[in-house]
Length: 143
Image (cartoon, rainbow, N blue to C red; front, side, top):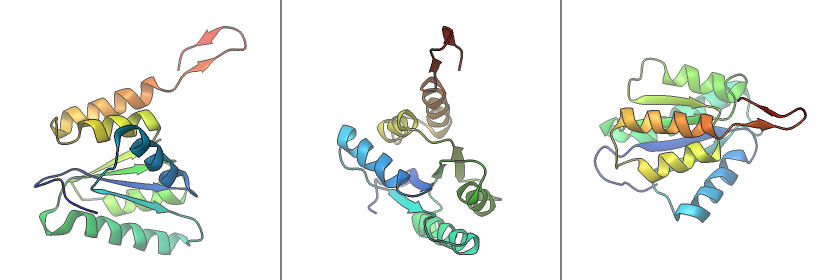
């Protein structure tokens, strides 16, 4: 992991299986190589080991500067969501983003460092939600 400069927003993907790695690979195929990003899978880890791993990765990513971090998680329920929720408690520099999808990540990587944190959070949420649509069966349905 390399730095983007003082106050860089770090992205950490904590997902089931290879999902996080594949999402990052796809982001990089579109936007190019990314820095200040870590990917961690729950594969083969007990709940306790996952919790400890996420805690360590978060501490390493923040460094001594307590850089802002976005923890991207695939599911709110389950081991990844639970571990991230516990680790992020009481840490104002950590934003927890459940339901990570490709549009959300593209927005994050394209705009971190270009807009303030409040704007980045709003953009990520909007893009992530807009991407979810259900069409078919008996016409279009709202997301």
